Amino acid sequence: VEIDIRNSAKIFIVLYSLSGIALGLSIIIFLFTFQGDLSVSYLRIGTLMLAGATIFVAVITSCQEIENIGEKSCAVAFTMKWYVWNKENKQIFLALLINLMNYYKFQFTENISVNFELGVGIVKALYSMVSVLQQIK
Image (cartoon, rainbow, N blue to C red; front, side, top):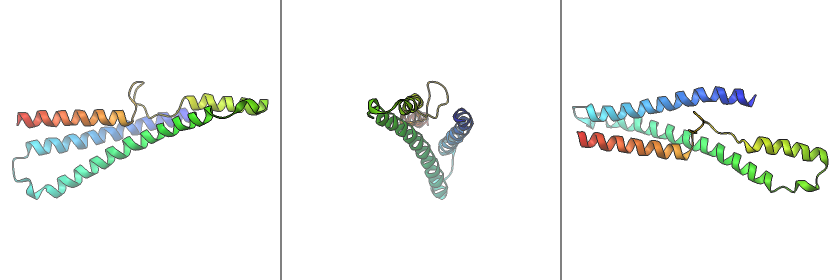
């Protein structure tokens, strides 16, 4: 059941991320290609930027929080005094430990997971792209 949830969640993560990237790129391209007076479009641009930023922050922080909860659960399980339990409880605890060691992550590939590191990387890439476009203009 857990594998089915992960596989179905991957599709939505990819779509959500791609829509966020498209929103961000469209805002940047609009700002650099617009040849008129931006004073009439400040409200529209501001709301688009606010929406893009809140979506980005919400995705990154929620996925990082899921990873943090998994790590905390694993740390708490390792501090339990399992050696005084009966045999049946030890077997249940062993199954719990095996499942906790593979804590839940939202991953695109084996190397890329949605967390703070990905968020910082995306912000750095956007900043470098904007600075290059600013120098070209």
